[in-house]
Image 1 (cartoon, rainbow, N blue to C red):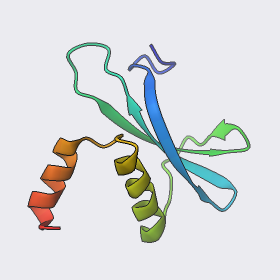
Image 2: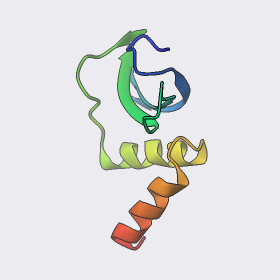
Image 3: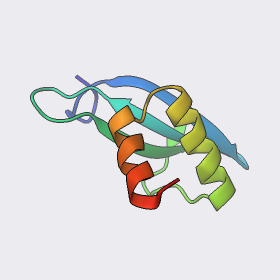
Image 4: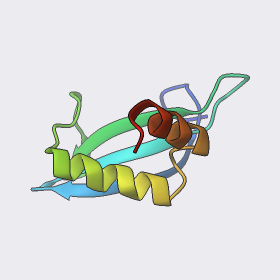
Length: 86
């Protein structure tokens, strides 16, 4: 179980934003709960307590990496595709 009591990290990808690293992580559920996704930002080995701030291009780069690493599920992509016809 992870430090947050919500499961352990399965995998993650990140993008660098200046001197900050923004991470998207896929967490392993501890029970019948669905998989969870966490966004976090780190600088000099410390996690920020506030959410990451990204430009649209940085967000796109992070989502592309997350899709390629299978952090975001095929169901997520199907839902996104059907909602926006992309």
